[in-house]
Image (cartoon, rainbow, N blue to C red; front, side, top):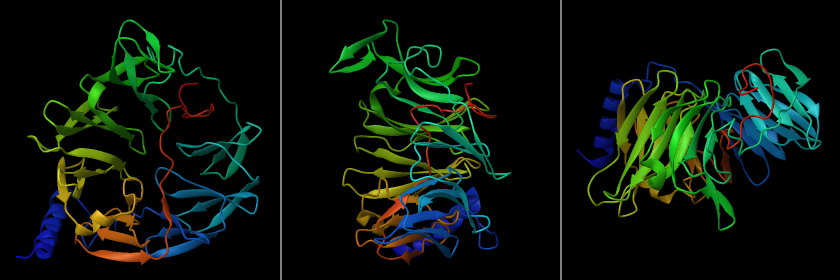
Length: 364
């Protein structure tokens, strides 16, 4: 059996075992936003919608909405309807947060607005002032240490300082005596989970779009191995995925959740600098390592790859500026568009909590 046949056979078996959509099932649609030299587009399934000459674009974590500014107007595209509606006249918006059924954004005058995605209503909301080093928000947080809030702002993964407080080092405020990576609940004001070994080898983290799961990668300098941890803040359970053992260096980077929280994907690099895609499905606790030669030619693939227009696909931009799609259950690679400059990922969780107070926002 040659490589391509063996690869496709393995993927079909994997799809049956771990729950990837089969040919008889309709996979979920995850719209893809990309641009060429002249315009922006949204790919929904197999249909492409032009957005025009856009000055700003933000996509919701579940990939169902795209906010953009065109002709001094903030507009919103819905993947469900394929329609675009005008929100308000403005030539600039700052940070955009997507929480529950709300899109929250601020203007250049720092006024804060919330647009309800279910009722299509726009309202000005109150902003809250948060001191990022305030112990009341994240206890023992050094100003320049890592932290990453869940989409709704309730939970945070952050580097909590040990006893001894903080110190100034090379112009930054850091922990004086080291620390530990923790998952913290700002409502219950308690640490849900500690990752003591992540203090040195920590190499990336990502909240799932719903905010239920936090994934982080950690490289052990002693064994030259990388592990992926997935913590469930609802059930408060932790899953550890080992990527490799021995002296071969394997790094995990570009952690990327599927928009429906069902799977986590990342790249794995071995000592020969070949790149594999690894997909872990939560429902079956099973992962698949995919070796596709085309992935070695991905242009800045750490940022230019996404879950594709369907839940069983991955898309990326190649060096020759082709937008390519890999179908996981068959192994087929196809070209979707040419002359593509960038893929635009959805708005991801931030080092700061959402700025406004509205139903579902934490902490208020």
